[in-house]
Amino acid sequence: MAGPLARQDLAELERPELEEALAHLGSAPFHARQLYRWIHRRGVTDFGAMTDLSRDLRAALAARFTVSQPRVLHRDTSADGTTKSLLQLVDGAKIESVFIPDTPAMTFCISTQVGCAMRCGFCLTGKMGLVRNLTAGEIAGQVRLLAAERQMLDRRFNIVLMGMGEPLHNYDATMKALRMLADPMGLAVSPRRITLSTVGVLPALERLATEPLMPNLAVSLHATREDQRDLLVPLNRKYGLSELVEACRKFPLKRRSRITFEYVLLSGVNDTPEDARRLVKLLSGLKAKVNLLPLNEAAGIPFARPSDDRVSRFAEILADHHLTVSVRKSRGRDIRAACGQLIVEGARTSPAQAMAALMR
Ligand code: SAH
Image (cartoon, rainbow, N blue to C red; front, side, top):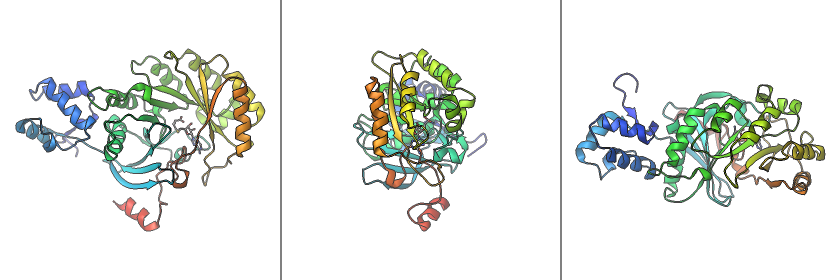
């Protein structure tokens, strides 16, 4: 709904804003806390069901406000238990979110944009281009919705901002969503359980360094030479590798925490022993760990996944030089829910289902 009569969407408000909105109704701050708890901790969006609020307040809320929530259009579950949900937002835009059951903790992988402007050469989401930014309510809403469905609102879980989009290219909404998710009256997700993954939008990374709420940082490096990274991660032409590594050196880290450097392995492109040695050198002196991502292949991606032997050899060189290294297990590859495979497209399990999903 648009225009002056549109009801305000409370899913977009962090708690202090909610307190202010309710104060305009003459309502006490503790009502705002109750309401925040209903929405964010219990996943309830219907004011009528908020039974510890007075009948009058519930009616007043329903007249002025709404609580929007993404809608599940389609769900695929992989043989390994990974579940990918296709979600529809209020304007009809579609995104994907992934639940990974045991990595070893339970993890929600959520999107921050519809599509992505970064156009990394090996990523399907990049092929879509950027459709629009998600709002804070839409980012936090993915977690609320998926956790509620699995009766996990009271459980501990991790959140990774590794779905569609570049979180630092949608800075304000992303940080607001993290504050909403971390709020003790809401899901109270500890920032230590949240990982923000970025290609390195430098001004935003510098801003992130000053935030009171600090998620874990993962940086998508993927290359060890400027010319190579220019080709794989086009943003490198604006914010180069050496500046990025320099910014990482300055990034304030909590005791015992490290920056994760993600490195997609592309056969014959960036997976040679020389690449591994250059990576060691590039990261020397940094509190770093490396997460190797053997390419998840997809039609339209002009690269190949290296053999397991080659991946092991690369990992060994890093480990021999005392870098902590892990190789990301690709979860949900059979349902195209793995890294870089999220794209909203027509081809689903059957053409009829695809049509149905698009027409809804
Ligand atoms: N925009 C953020 C988050 C995106 S996805 C970022 O770039 O960091 C999370 C990770 O998956 C990134 O490291 C991304 O480069 C990687 N990725 C993208 N496509 C991939 C693919 N086809 N195979 C393996 N990893 C991929």
